[in-house]
Length: 139
Image 1: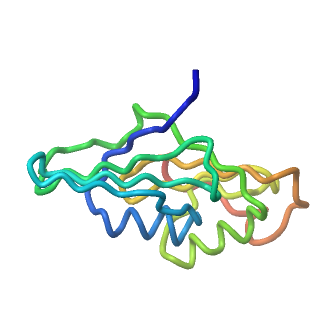
Image 2: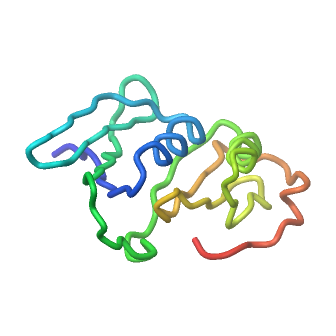
């Protein structure tokens, strides 16, 4: 058996691609648009040869309320430098809900309120402003 992907429904495709691609650094692997079904599927992965992907599903013209996404849990990504990743996301306007105070773990939410856990490869020493930053909101 091989794990393939996790599907996440998105409300705004451009906003989601900005978050996942520009913010997190994922790459678009392939895209499928289905006019008859009125949906677009975009598969994203970390790295050139992914072991697993995220499938963004955009349903054209849907007014469905996806709620707060707390029933989903979270997606987790290992990052090379958690401080740089959080600073980039914060500069793009995303709220770091659980800052990387310990130099190892942080949480941020996507435009569709999916919790994203960022885990540092190893540990970095605590660094300001992160070390004294309080949690904000939910993750």
